[in-house]
Length: 225
Image (tube, rainbow, N blue to C red; front, side, top):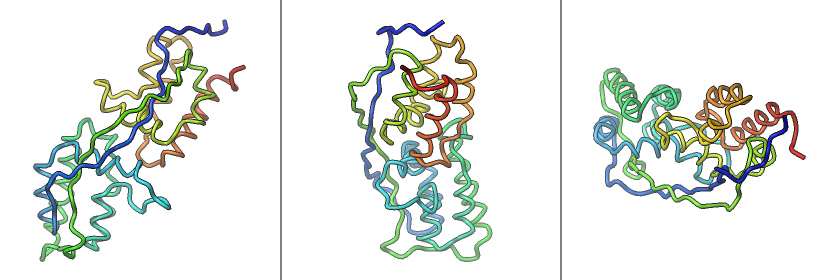
């Protein structure tokens, strides 16, 4: 049976921006980074793992979180940079668990050093946090199939808001697409599971948008009329 268009509970397409805010905390060496991680606000961990997705870049980042990048370029520690780079925040149940993982990796590295590595004075690590600003794009989608047409045209920041930031907004850790599909679940169970299986951390937002668009296109079998 064809889907019936309805204005009830439409999917509201939103966009966003992350505004970086200083915390006043900084680190000049690896021990100070460890100490800072112990006490910094959890929002700072979120920003340094996810904020880079929305910062303008001319090419793909070498490392996918700011801690790994500083270990490489600030401390010139390739080993620590690689260990930090493979940490996947989506595998953690909370930002506190992510904090503990970071601290353990750094403490292990400190035990391996005879002398604590320092960065140059102009290469210190500044702990930042962020405030998300949300915009209404005025786009409304009536039925899940509408996402076949809408997803390819979504901005990178809209994909970030609906698929990444949503996971910390919803108690279940779901993205906005799955939340919206819950009351339209008939025939969409496989789609919801496929969305749940996507790990967004090791993909760019453009790659993630393409992956989501292909998933909805494959599920609904073509573009809507």
